[in-house]
Image (cartoon, rainbow over all chains, first blue to last red; front, side, top):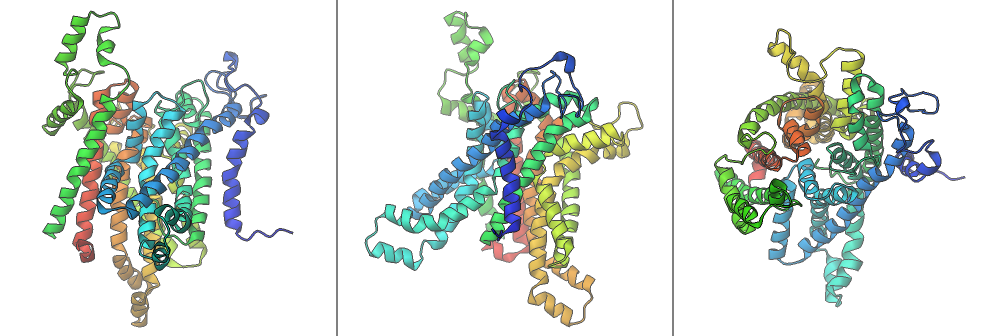
Length: 274
Length: 314
């Protein structure tokens, strides 16, 4: 019999994995074509025959659209975090181990990006690019990298003068070996755990960009875009309009709970700055 | 103290310059040629040249940036392309509306965050701690647009208790009471995330102080629970100030969604309309104004922090 050593982490991991599995299984689970609308079936309330969650303003099945939307919505949340974890670790470690000039140049650049309110920086970068998944991923990567870089920088600085690093240098390790064998094993777990706590935020930002029309173009279903599409129905069919809002909220809670339990396990008291 | 403030002010200058460069770049580098956009693809070369010279597009990018920055510093942010009005004249009244909404939301953040955080810190292992933690996590995870839509669906459409948007009723008494009624839903939607973060930080800080020798000493002297809590809360206040200030800055940017969904005529709403109309000067001016306010608020927080905690100044 398998015993679960950390029930809270296991529960949060299951909750966060569920939307990912639903996204992967969208072709199997979706009862209808997400883009095919029947104008006669416009704005059916949840529970209508054949449409368990109702239909949108163009008569498209909402359950199918929500399932298919999970793919771009989750990609736009997970991919930028992965990019930011890699780029942030690289920048943070470089800044902490190289000379003062490089360190200052990198830190001041990060400060500028850090001074920008996150949503506005994402909007600024996304307006530069053709709306789409690529633009969202790039914009959010730029927004998230400075925070990760700071964590990597602080952690590397903490161990920079450690005796085992000196010992490795004295015994003739090259700088690359030093980073790969001595620094990365210490910094990577901290960066990964911190990055995991950013996923919920990234999903929320990504849907927000789509809601503003800067994300995946229609008719591709995406949670934030669906929020905007269903907005006109808010006063006649409030429960339909609330559906994508509820989905984003639930997914965000699941990923934040996972990030929190992971951070608690590592014993890190670092709170996400925003 | 003065030296500390001067140093922080000086450090803010390169930051603000960087911010303005990014904002300028978003418009200067945007895809598409503005001359073609104005004149159409079939325009003769002389007309294109004349227009490029008139709006200054024939000059190198750094020169255009310095020129733009000089105008921005004197309050001239250009003309909005969708309304043909000066950007600054559109931004100023909107800023007032945004500050009203932000102030209301910030009051909720402090009140709710301190209450929820204190509740979680009172008993280290009780159900109140778990309840407060769960509530804070839920609040932190709640995107403003989701909360705004759900609150409107429940309180404005289903129960018809509160107005669904705007700042005043079209036909009615008006006045402060009416404004407050219109503030309840947008301020709540904007406040939840910062409220959750504030609660978490305040709980951690207060728990630490309540478990310290200071608290033991107070209890040993026979002080009541309320008096111990009052003294400890005072000691935990620097953390509250720091996180509170950060949240004030966060509120400023979060209003894009809340103002759009509640038709609140502030900066966020203006920015959304500008984005929809691809009105780039207005987007540029709005982002610059909010980002500057963001840097300014952070500076104020640092100053306040240094004023109450001398250790920060060194």
